[in-house]
Structures are given as C-alpha cells and as structure tokens.
Length: 170
Image (cartoon, helix red, strand yellow):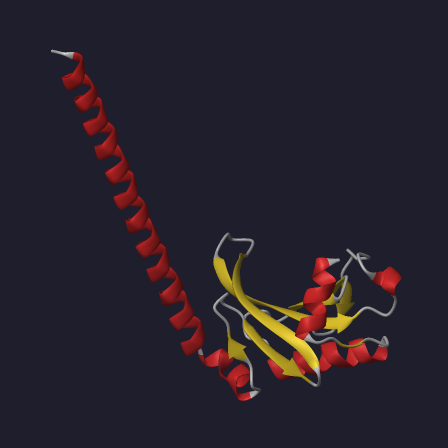
C-alpha cells in the first residue's frame, strides 16, 4: 500500500465517525425535544393548573407558569420530588419577587426556612421561595394570598420584571 491510500483510509474512517456522531447527536436532540413537548402538554392539560390560567398566568418555554398577583411577579414551577419510599411525586414550587428594601439587602439571604401554616418560606435576595405543605394539590390562590400578605406585612413592594433583571446584573 502506498502512503496515499493509507491517508485516504484514515480520512474515510474519521469522516464516518464524525457522521455517526452527528447522527447520534441529532437523534438525542429530537428525543429531548419530544420529552419536553410531552411534559409541556402534560402540565398544560393538568386540571390542577387551570386556576393559574384563570388568574392570567401564562406557561413559558422554560416550563413554568408566570403571572402577576396583586402586583407581585410570581412563578409556579411544576417539578418532582421523592418521598421516603423513593416514589416520585409531583411538586410545585412558588417563587414571588419583591423590591429589596435597601441597597444593602442585595445579596443577603435567609437560608433557614420560615414556617408558615401553608408551607415553608425561604427568602433570598429579591425572591421568596415557597414550598406548600400540600405541594401535590396546592390551593394556588390561597398560597398567593398568603405570600403576598406576608411580603406586604414585612414592608416589601412589588418589583417589575425589568427591574428584577437589572438586580440580577449586580
């Protein structure tokens, strides 16, 4: 064999490997897209989220509901968690956003949860994360009322989406 045929053979093998890798990557992208579309359809069709749509919340491309409740920007993220028996359970995490009181509040966080009769609150920066006690079938309206009432009682005011983005840049 001459040198040219060896180089041609190596190039052919490398080209085949590259083509196979590209085909594999395309299949994995298509499979992931199908999973996301299926999950999106399941969430949108779930009866428990109808109230969110009735409250004017929209379902985003990032697979969470977003809306304004009594002036506060709120996200509801459908997710899952495992129980003590290692069974997968549907779960909802609610995030409400507020204007920090002082410039010094930026970056401060309270890591310990604050127990509330409807669930646990975690304050961080300009966000309160709420894990409802009844996380499988939460009463969203009651939870929103509770979160907003606590924020108002503590002296926090709503923040616009634009101002929130600016805070994230700090």
